[in-house]
Structure formats: structure tokens, C-alpha cells
Image: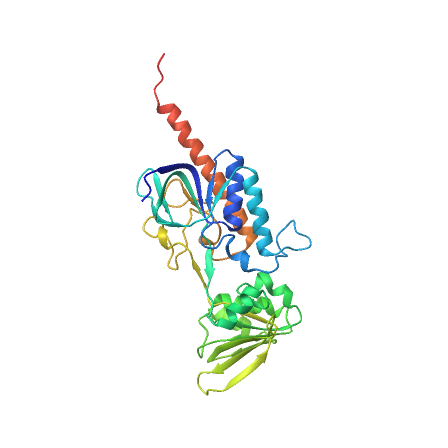
Length: 326
């Protein structure tokens, strides 16, 4: 344990569009934010090869390059961006206590949580290979579907999100093959009907993905196996989408912040406030609906503004209650 406790006016936990946007606004408001980048500096966008739907980039930009620019902008206004990740918190008292890398203790006037969420993958070596190469594996159809216009793709999943993404892809792609592990969907009836009634969506039940196939640079197909018959077949596709859910990175907050049944932080409606005064949330740590860079950035702005107003209210209250002497 560190012998020295650092005091911080505004601590931002996590980077990505939400964290960096919060930092930009907090720094411009003279809140002197300190931002810890976390285990994945830049967040999920660092695994996205091309970003073409974020305003201000008419020619598109790679996810990593975009995160570098956001970081530079935050630092330009004075944000202290640091390596490391928060491993423990204590929000039980008036002072918000945070520990970094299990050693450094920080006491914070405000905390902005922007730890995001991590997409779940199948865990196949070939899947991870082409994910890292940016060569055809994606966990976001809305983000990357455009790149597969008029091509054939496959998507793994059986829930509402999988059906929604498959339907979205069907509007762009020549054919969409849905790979469903069981003999039925987990999705709502309305979502099931939507994909079942879409002519260019083929649904393969009782189907496990064995390997994502490629030429070493890009995806060329997927090998699947029918769990009932044992039949193995190869399906030619140029894109492989995974829609089996996301896991919010909120485990360390569960003893203090209100979470929903899947672990997303519950914010006060129309604000970035949590159930703990002085602690705010933005980005995918709270958003299980949109999960886009632009919406994350918007909530980052909200979190910084709410934190600024919280501090202003505290300072005003202190001025009123503190006696003056002539």
C-alpha cells in the first residue's frame, strides 16, 4: 500500500470515446481530471479497423487512430492521462476512495466511470486472429456492416441482439447465414419472426462454429458442424459477426453502485448520475442499447457536466454554511 494518498478533483476510470470526451469537458471546466486508461487503452474501438460513422471524419478513420486523436485533445486541455487500471473502490463515505493497480490510493471529489463493456467471443484461435487483423471478424454489425455490402456473411447468436443485427445486415448483404447453437432462438417472438420472414437470411439450427477460415489476411469462410447429425460443412463468407452478448466491465463497483441483472450500471434517467452522490457513469458501462462511439461520447459530455454542477453545488453550499468573521 502506498504511504502517500493522492487527492484528485475529478477521476475518470477508463478511456474510449466516453472517457476522453468526459476528460475534454472536465479539463475545460478547470476540474483538473486524472484519467486512467484501463486494461484496454482506447476501449473497444481499438479493435475496429475502420470507423466511418463518427461525425467529422468524412474519409473515415481507424479506431486506434481516432483514440490517439481523442487522447491528444484531452491532454491539450490539461488532462493527466495515465497507464494503469483501477482494482478496488470504496464509495461508502463522503470521500470516494480508489486504488490503482492494488497499490496507489486516490481520494476523489468526483468519479466518472467509463469502463465500457467487452464483447463476448467464441474463443476460437482463428476468430481472434482475424479479429486482431481487422480482416473480417466483428462484434458490431452496425459499426462494420457497411464494409460487407453485397457480400455474404455469417452471424453467430440466438438472442434479440443477434436477430436485430442479422436483420440489419440483410439490408446490406447479399446473404446472411445465422448460426444458432440450439434448436430454437432465445429471442422474442417478434424478433424471431422478423428474421424468419427475411428472404436473404438462412438460419442453421443446432450448428456449432468450428473454425473461421481465411487466407491469412481476410476471412473467406466458416467451418461449422451440426451437433445432431455430425455433418461438417464450409460456408463461403467474407464477414463473420459474433452477437452472443457483452459483459460490462463493472465488477469492482457492484458493492456500491446499483447494477442491473447483467451488470450494467443504472443511471438516474436523463443524467449520468448513479445512486452514489459524486459518482457518474458514461458510455457502454451503462448503455446496453446503442453501444456506439457517438452515443458514448455524448454521455461522456453529460457525465462531465453533471460532475461540474455537483462540485459547484457543494462549493456554494460550503460558502453558505461556513461562518465569516470580521
